[in-house]
Image: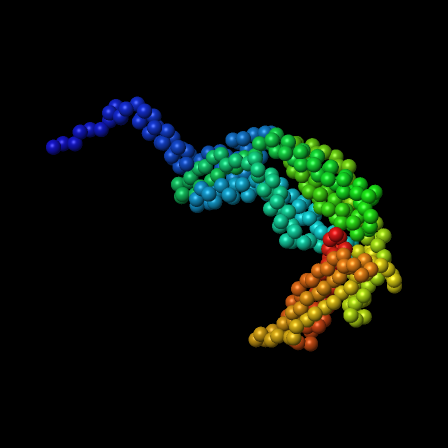
Length: 335
């Protein structure tokens, strides 16, 4: 028995509409309709005056979308490294005549935080699949809503910086309390500066002038450090000299007698040998006191290695000295 011919007329109208929609969706994600312009020029689909755009490509939709969003976030990562340097590293850099001493972990965290913030309004709006099966995704961010978010963030951070500086310069009952407030003010100012850079990206270069800047806050920090007078206590002359040098790097005066005392202690385990390598492990402890009261106490791990056992002690000293200004600042500003 011959099979009857099947024509579109045999399908009900609602089904025909459904099939038409399906075919439209499939053609939008295939190469049969030709390569859309936004794959090579994303701004052709969404004008640069109103949107930021970025494209990502991969073998699957999810990865393509993630890459498009990541490329969109990269627009906002300019100058993050410079502003993410911690204060103690900046002081060491200045003392040694260097321009930058970067804390890579802090940089990574800052970039990740900024990326999450700026992508809160981003969308993936288009996909296209090439004949080879490669998928491209188009991510967009509307500039006006993003600008509003950055403006709100800047206003809040300006208030935070002002309140912390007012407390440090007018209300703090000790240099320690002032230093802690100023450290927090510096971090807030760094966030504010980055938010303003982000604002300028989406607002045709127009930012909001800041009542403060990071350099001004750092000057206040140096003044707070300079107002402290610390007595150093250590288990031997070598440790005492190293702590005194770290304090000098930070601009903290060292005196023979003071209620504020900073002590250090190094504990190391016996040397271990693994194949051709010798290892020395231990910890370094700093204690900050006001008279007999412990204000802060912290311990950091130490681990060095060498193929020559007689080099381990010096490598321990070098490891500690390279990090000691940061340890000291972290301790003094931890209240």
